Image (spheres, one colour):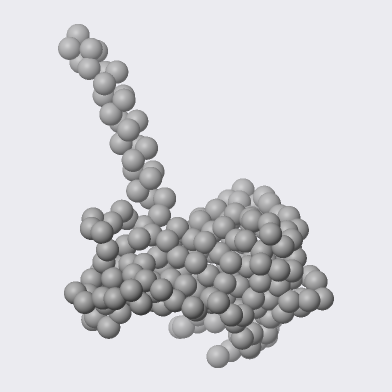
Length: 220
């Protein structure tokens, strides 16, 4: 017993270090185990990420995908253009990506989550009303302007809206090569196969008729 007591402080320190390292491991993509692993986007092998291809060039680490405004064609009035591993294969295993979001006047990037990344945005031009909601249902929001940055914590519902009369745009940084995005309304009302009407009606405290009406707006 006395030997155990002598070892107790060391055990506590080791457990604390393991907890810290475990937290870091869950904070983003897994750490890479080699210098580079350029994604083979054509591979049929399924892994947590993409297999490495053997031949690569500097072009695998470069892209002009977010150099120009995205073409807005949806009813939300916004367009997200991702600079992730799917457009830059060299990002594979590096745990980072970017995106550009363009907003028409009055456009919104509706409430959504990134399950695998924290996001930070930089306003290129225009002004936006932005916010996220904590798991305690607290809204944290602000109006941001050109040159300002704002952070959305990983996994929390967040949004951006252009309430101005001119277009707006942001550049986003995310700590995942493929952060993923789930927009709340389409996820629930345009799922395939569909979420049952009674689940949605009870969840949102609306009628089945209203559920059908909302689903019709998201019909593909």
